[in-house]
Amino acid sequence: METDASTLTALWGAVIFSGFYHGINPGMGWPLAVSAGLMEGRHKAMVKAILALALGHLLAMLAILLPFSMMTALIDWETEIRIGAGALVVAVGIYLLINRRHPRFLARVHPSRLVLWSFLAAMAHGAGLMLVPIYLGICGVDPGEGGHEAARQLMGQNVASAFFVALAHTLAMTLAGGVIAAAIYFYFGLKFLSRTWFNLDILWALSLILVGSFGIYFALHGH
Image 1: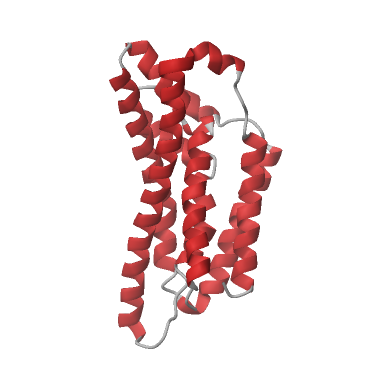
Image 2: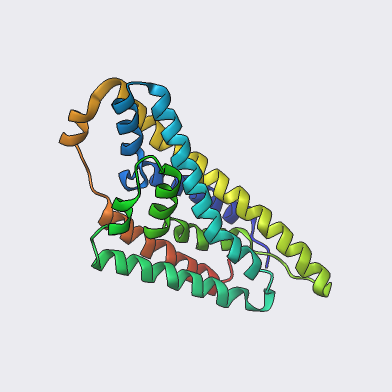
C-alpha cells in the first residue's frame, strides 16, 4: 500500500517536528552542552558537546529504526507490525506517565562520555520509539509481485529510509538544542536556567501515547 503525497509530507513534517521537540527537551542533554562550555570557558567545548549529543542521539534512533526496516519487508504482516509498534509506543508512554523518576544509571555515566550518555538517554526516554510509527507510515509500500527479489529491494529502500529519517530528526534536534544552549551560554547564563527550568516529563509521556495511538489508527485505516 503506497502512501499518498500529502500523507507522506505530513509524516516527514512529523519527523522534523519531533526532532525540534526532542531538542527543546532538556532531558535530551542541551544543559550538559552549556555546562561543558562554561566549565572550560570556551564556546568550542559547547559545540563539541552538542555534536557528541547529536551523535549519540542519531545512534539511538538507528538502533530502533533499523530492526523495523528489516521487518517491513514482511509485507503480509505490515499492518500487524505497525499496530504492534504503535501499541509498544503507547505502553512506554503510559509507563513513563506512571513512573516519573529518571533512570538512575544515567547519573553513573561520566559527563565526558556524552555520546554514550545521549544514546542511553534517548533509549531510556523512548525517543527512538516515538519515530517508529511515523517511519512505518513513510515506508508504506505496494508489495506488487516479484517474490524474494522484491523483498530484498524493499528492505534496501527501507534501510535507506531509516537512515534518512534518523538523520533528519537528529539535525532538527541538534538545531533546536543548539540554539537554546547557545542563547543561554552567550546571553542568559546558568542563573537564568535555574530560574526558568521546565519539566516536560508529563508532556513527553502523553506525546508518546498520542503518537502511538495515531500509528495504530493509520495502520487500521490503511494510511
